[in-house]
Image (tube, rainbow, N blue to C red; front, side, top):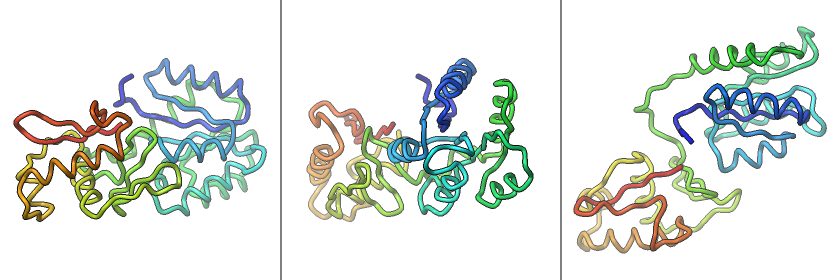
Length: 232
């Protein structure tokens, strides 16, 4: 799958509509994840990054409006995610409440999938795409590394890292795909015990982020050059 395709999370308790919209967007070059409730969506968002959230206003349990409020109040990478709200009601008061909650756009049901596609593309065009922006987190399978706090999470649980491991992962994750030499890492970590000390730190870090540290998926050795992190 092309990971450069926009990733959309659709939240709707109507499983038939959810299936229809997923198939349509996939056919139009999107990655799509579906959830039937706000709780399910929140669980998925712990470990996966999304470019846009499409959700129904009226859902059992937590409503789309309540979910939008909770997202905007969070202090993480999702607090600014664009939100497109689906509603069967066209009342202006509902739209005003949604805008107050930080919803970016509304669509009234029923609608044609083509219109949804046009709305999504319009919203995504308004999002800055400067590839030089510093990432705020790195996804490593079920793990999530917060670059601002230098903390590693599995769901809501913190995976213990030493200060050196956290700093090392922070350097590598701040520029994913970039090869860092042992000398550069040694200087940035201010280590005085030689470049091989980096190898020890790398091995310890692999023990914590890799399913198979001997055959790493994320933290790779580039022979003769150094190390590179390739997150999801």
